[in-house]
Structures are given as C-alpha cells and as structure tokens.
Figure 1 (cartoon, rainbow, N blue to C red):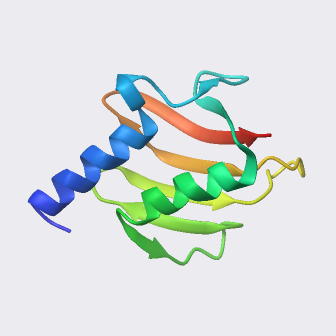
Figure 2 (cartoon, rainbow, N blue to C red):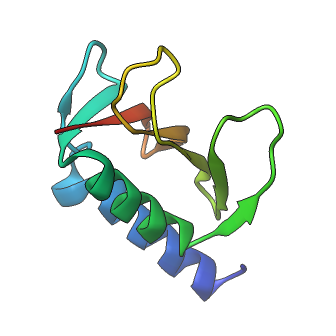
Length: 108
C-alpha cells in the first residue's frame, strides 16, 4: 500500500489500538500489556479488523497468524498464550505516537 491507502490503513489501525487516543483496554502486568474482556470472539474480531488493513505473512517462528500493517509493523494472533493459559492474545510489534503495545490479552 502506498500513499492515501497507507495513510487510511494507519489511521484505522491506530483507532483500533488507541481508541480515543488511549491504549486499548486496561493495563496488564506492564503498561505494554493490555487486557481486554470478550474472550476469543473479541480477539478474533479485533485481529480480523487489523488483518483487513494489511497483508498476511508466513512466519515459521511465530505460533499463530501474522499480518504486516503499513507504517505500523506487525500484529499476530495466538488462540492461547505462550504460557499455556487459555487467553487468546494479539501480539503487537509496533510503536504508535511514541506509545508501545506488546500484547493484548483477551479475558472472558
């Protein structure tokens, strides 16, 4: 994506990850980890919204689905956390306006 399409995708992704200008959800164990309620259906829905703004990529080192977002970086979806807990997680490899989000964990 280039130009206007890229700018629109960035703005939409930013609105999803930073609604109202604040990081999504509640602070987790660290500021970069966010907790959102809604469980697996909310996690899948948010990931699909983000995925529609970029392009899916294959990464054999990543346990889940990954998407490159223009001007932002990469996001990935794992149906369970790496520590075996049941909470689905969206991994975010990006910093937006100087604020970093590493993980969005979805609780029931």
